[in-house]
Every structure is written in structure tokens, then in C-alpha cells.
Image (cartoon, rainbow over all chains, first blue to last red; front, side, top):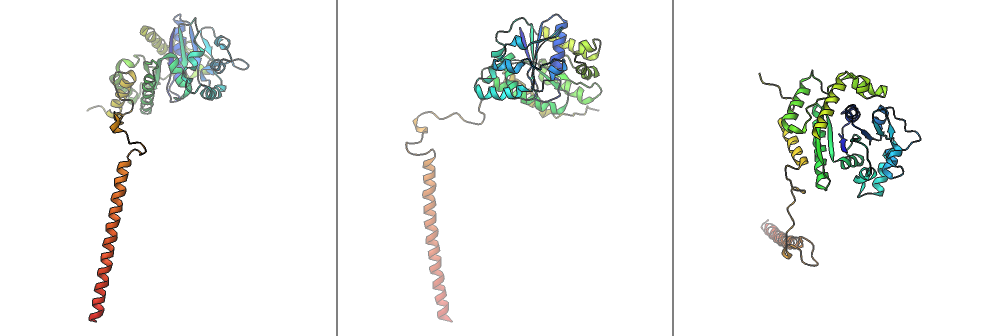
Length: 249
Length: 92
């Protein structure tokens, strides 16, 4: 079972879009996928139209009040461990109750999990406790990055955190940096992408996620982009990413 | 004409270092700037004395000596002025 955590402390970089559509593309290639929404804003949960009212979510799974399978929501091609705003309170509670062990909370909660080829974790836009739980759970990070100047500052911070976590004894690899929202018309996008490849070499995915209306429209229809517009640019890009992830092993 | 560079080279150099450190291919000390603690008894302060107590003591002693010197100088000046004043009075 391969685990991937999609992380970037900046909001709007394409984390949720990447988690959903990479999952959908891998599923199209015959893999069993679990998507874990670790964001109290529950963007992934909502974008796939998952209802959580009266049902346990990742918050209850983290505290041990529910078994993971009780909280799973099965879609035709994906399984979702949904989130809800309650998760923000749960985060504080876990920090209070397990001050030294909280990074292991998700790892412990999903310890006995079987039956999936990939578990993809969508983190909140911060480098707080929930993100740390997600990072420690998988030990493998996919970092979506807008091809803009300000995004580079954020990337340095994430890399600093990776170093700290590794030094604390948790294995951690950077699966890859994914250039997102790539605007083919601007020289800034082109330059950031070129320099990223020159600087970070094999740590940058060959795939680039281009700006696309279908990627923005799909969540409004509670769909991933491969179901919403199978022949579109967004679907094409995420299929290419999925192939790259599979090649990575 | 060369290409206009929109992002400074230092930014990329910083990223390269950050990635090397994150990937564990570059070794850095965990507490940069802090020297390792000195070994052996000699480096430790004596019992009952705070760290740096010796230096503080020297400073205090120096301070006292200087104050005494200043007081002596002031006394001399005062005496000198009185003397000059008296002479003037006598002449006038």
C-alpha cells in the first residue's frame, strides 16, 4: 500500500484538486484508492459531494471514537475518509491529550488499514499539527506549487520542516514537486518551471498541471475532472501525473 | 538580447540548499552558531559561584578602584581651587 501526503502551507495551490484528481486517475488505471481529508475546511469532502451529517468523520477516527471503516464513504471509483469543521477542535484535543505523541495520531488510527493500493492524504493549508500527522503517516510528500514567486518562499518553509521532521527520527521523502496552475502564456510561469527543474532536478515532476476551467468547474458538479470532462486538459494532465507516480513505484 | 530574469539567482540557490538539507544530502549542525559545550571540570564554574562570577568580580573591583581614584582627583581639584581663590582675595 503506497501512501502519499499532498501538502503546501499556502492556500489555493491545488492540493485538494491534486488529491482528488490524482486519486481518480489512479483509480481509472485500476487501483484501489482511499482519499483522506485532513483539512477542517473539508474541501475534498465537499468537492466530491460527500455528506457527513450524523456520520463519523476523520475527527472521530483520530480520537478512536470510530473505526476507519465506519467513517468511509464509498463512491463508485473512490473511497473517502471525510472531514468536517469538528476536526479543528479535535486537533486541539489531541494536542492536549497526546502532547508528545500527536504526530503519530493518524498513523496509529489507520494502522490496520488494508485493501487499498494508494492512500492519498489532503492536508490543510498550514504547517500545523494536522499537517504534521499527515506527513508522518505517509513519509512521502507531493508538493503542488504555483509557478509564481511567492510560492517559492512557501516551498523553502516546507523543506525546512521536512528536515526538522527527518532529524526527529521520522522517515521522510519528497516524492515530487508538482508545478500547478501553469499559465503557458506568461514568461513567469515558464521561467519558474525552467529554474525549478534546473535547481531541484529529479524532485520536480515532469508533468505540469496547466490552468484549466474544467479543474475549477468539476467540484461545483461534485465530480473529479476525469468524470466531468474526460477529454479535457485537466484530465490529461492528471493522467500523466498518475503514470509518473506509478513509474516511481 | 538575453532573457530578462524575473526571479533573483539567490532565491534558487536558497531553494537548492533547502532541498539538499530536506533530502539529507547536505549535513548541517542542528544548532548552528552554538559551539559544543566544553568538557572537563575546568570549564565548570566553582561551587557557590555563578557562571562568569570571576569576571563580574573583576569588574566590580575595577569599578571600586576607579571610583576611589575619581574621588581623590575631585578632592585635589577642590583644594586647588580654594587655594587659588584665597590667593586672589589676598592680592585684591
